[in-house]
Length: 287
Image (cartoon, rainbow, N blue to C red):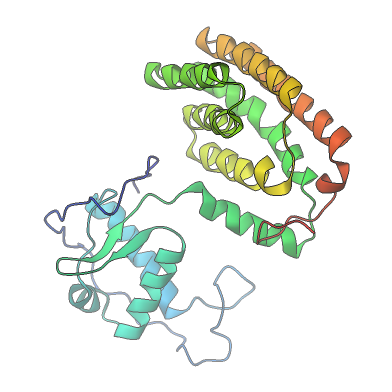
């Protein structure tokens, strides 16, 4: 299946010629929706998947087979009802499942319908936050995960980064240098720096994981701020990481990233230990 990275704007999307899905109808589920043990996901215990989940999975599979891209329209409801031989209620529930996951948006008006999107990492972040809250996992778990993952990711990026992404990485450093009083701009550049490296690893899983972890441990959300002296240290660290990546030195890039995340961890532990000990919450409001 095609994996999409950069998101597209729905409002300006055109309606291309619809690509009909090639497979037959979804097999009738063995378990009716009304069965007592058919509720919930097929990933939990031994419960079978609901009919709507089966339809949603078939839709996603057919999206890949048809070669659809972000901004493309899915077939209209009447066509999908025939393709998947299901009821209108089940189909609409399947589409709501995909909408909730950020896979589609429902474009209103004539010529509208389900339009394909590029799911953002925030959807993965939300799922992780929910699971972490249910397990009472603290925010320091995210710091530990970043420390384990990002040096490896950075080493891969040093080997695989494109010239275009390297230029974007340099641009984030330029933004950091430009106006030290622009805290929002600095934070945005900081997150884009780590995001560019993550996606430049060439591993889609790392890209989504890194962006999701950054979204969960966003200092503007949980109250971990970076004063001016810390900002200078972050800028120096980014410059060193960039230099290693630009030289295609995977070992040095990974080591500089490890030092960078360790420094952040020590700072957060010293200044905000009570926040790191708080349980991650799905609503992004600690305490």
